[in-house]
Amino acid sequence: ILNVEQSPQSLHVQEGDSTNFTCSFPSSNFYALHWYRWETAKSPEALFVMTLNGDEKKKGRISATLNTKEGYSYLYIKGSQPEDSATYLCASHTNAGKSTFGDGTTLTVKP
Amino acid sequence: GAVVSQHPSRVICKSGTSVKIECRSLDFQATTMFWYRQFPKQSLMLMATSNEGSKATYEQGVEKDKFLINHASLTLSTLTVTSAHPEDSSFYICSARDAESGRDTQYFGPGTRLTVL
Image (tube, each protein chain N blue to C red):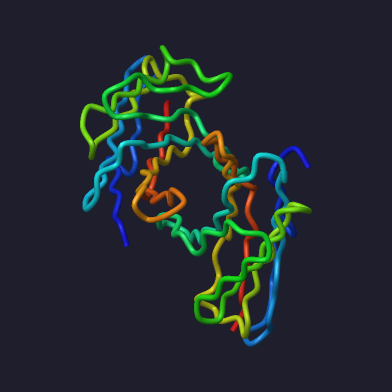
């Protein structure tokens, strides 16, 4: 993996469904992986900062895991709500201070 | 959490004019700020890294004479798009790094929508 890739590009789910999406990143020179939530007309908001292989972070119904050896992170949302609708960005940071963003996964939760 | 403001939120200008965008960290000091550009349906593209008191570091392909960056204080960085052309129309967003938050968390401004006629 040379770039940061997110999949799927977009996702439509019903309220109450649980969902997950993927961020793949270069595993070499890894420093940290950030997840951001970006609602329309607002600033991207930091969700998680993950650094160690095997890290698991949780905030309410949202959780994330990290595998630095194979270069991927999963973001999970349990029991999706309409207010979870947003674009979820991941960004990989290298130990040289360079950050690269993925294209994001746009989640739409239908009531 | 930390707050970053960006001004203006939207600007429309004529081709050939210059536009200045301000990025401020409101409740923390940011020695490093970043400027991004977002093209339609694409991710944030890092343009440059702005360090307080020194010259900005530009990413490959970004013209430093076209996109002037000044980081004169620990709370303010400015991006000036000089002699703007329609192809410069885009969404520009800044972020500020709060080194005390751990692993260099970035806090984003709300962005500026630039339209060049």
